[in-house]
Image (cartoon, rainbow, N blue to C red; front, top):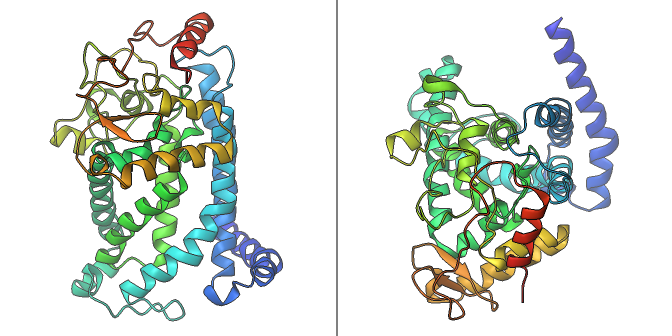
Length: 374
């Protein structure tokens, strides 16, 4: 039965690659940049399957056991559009036209023969090819560790936070929020993580599939659900309850509280490096205290990319944008380190209306008024 499903999947990918992807590549005059129309088609199918899983499983769970109860999903809607646009559009093209050739080049992998010639853990220790699961576990542990370290840098390097803050600006974090990403930020992340694949000797195609697996896990961890993994597994894997605390808004009374839970799949890195936070009530998500970030919630698909790029350019072109530390952004999109006054106000961030999960519509409206640009 399983072999029949695999055969059907391969047939569908081949047909879609030859009759849809290849004509599109020809039309765009970019056929010469890839010899993988079937792999692109398979990635599109995986993306479509991922959308079905999110919509058919994670989304209903948000209705059954929500972490936060919302009167509407006004802010969450844009994330749905960003997700399908990424999964069945931008990601497959970027992955196979840019990432795969780069990874294969530096890994010494021939796309046609699968031969690996460059230095990598796979070539230095050939027995890893006979122990696929050992190779996968070692690779993914190191991949996740690099992601954890990279994620921490995203929060303290101002020009990177300028882009990453778009992901955190979401007031209604849901199963669609994972792909709420500035596209330049996504490219930088991909190149950093591709370095792990090159080190281990992972082919470009394998790297793309592993990224898609990680994407699905992150879709679940962003879901608006009351699900934790308990006192044991919760210390090993990232749950929605665990990751929601990472997205909590700034709490003035406990200013370092939100610097926590940076892991992607494994929570063990947060435990080891003492950034894990447990046993907290559900906090509101977003960056409501900094209106130059919170304004993302009022923008459209193009507007959010432009707004976050303005913050990036305002940061990368000044010295404060390279000095490590938490920042807010002024009206000129320049980063201001949080110890400095902003507009004559010593307190940049405002307190929550309440630290509990369920915010009423009136409270949300009041917060809106406080954080609107003047």
